[in-house]
Length: 521
Image (cartoon, rainbow, N blue to C red; front, top):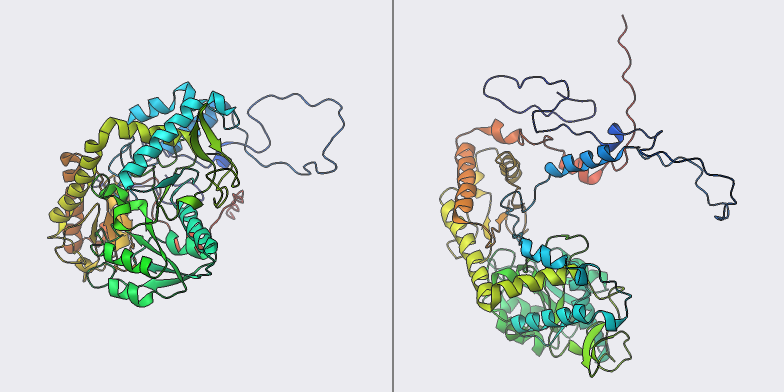
């Protein structure tokens, strides 16, 4: 049953049209309206007495018009958001194959630890003497991260990956300024995450692209040719976004350092080499670590993510404040750039010290696995990706030959030639199979890219079901079953959107629909 202003919701059936229901619901698949369609803007969900006489203190800035928000009773509001949550896909719903995003299981033990009162109820303005346990946890997490990366210092305040990139690149800029150098160019490979060039440009650098060679990796000769006295840094992801390990990384790092520049590594794909490789030994000077990817904390988790940045010995003096140091009385926070041990600090990245809940979850995961367990997690993630690649290689095409993958399997759209279908059609049809689509059209160096990262969380049975779904779609595409794809998704709460129009002309404000004119008799 279609309601005014909504897309078609009737699925394809083999026995004719789906039966009509008065509500538009189909059993537990509930047809949920917008909150403005459920509530009324002229009522509230609670009874509030009119205010008595009082003198306003807003200096004429009182609201002159109604808020226009819908009024709902508490049960109505609760049911609305619960119903919406059931339409959402998350890591607790099933395999989340987003490539280059490491959507892994979030253990419930982590959540239990994060809810311990000493961590959950801590306040950033408490006296330092009352939060020694929280500071000790951050200090211990620091020890683990430095041990795993072989780096010298770690900054915890960045809230997520892009914020961590900003921190690392600001440390690099501060180091050049301290050395009296005004370098203005940052080298970024074509296969980099989009945040890399954006971050460099944000703090005033000119970005110069480094092309990928035929095998999907960065050519050291191309980097050396681009290195000049104006180059401040190279930003490289390893393993890269083609799912390949940059085997020439040490040679590249040595060339960058010889030119007086620094090596920034994007840590989004750290899950592939955790416990296997120490990035400090590869020549990296700065790298952000997504706790909400590699170390199993949720993408969100009741607040912002966490993207700590590890720094080499050369950049450690420029780490932002605050920092935790030990003295005779316990642990304390170095809050200002002028304090001992922070005289060259680049300043403060955020108001306080970071996301405590994420720190607790990450350390809980580390302690649960131990060093050997984290190494196995990386090995299992790589094994899962190569299993998917091997099981789909005969029906889907790979862009870089038979070279083994790291944490993710990359396919292109060459196998769709002659079918009249695109990568987007395959992704939409995957929704009907009960999966979130893989990452599509990224990395940009691969035409029609389909990037799949299964992580170590999935069992073989889970992987086999996902592989079976993709194989079935591949056979159907090659058999000419176009309607299955061009109309997909058929079973989702909403049908396919006009994504170009949604991006270029989004409707971000609800407007009450006008009543339809009555038909003339």
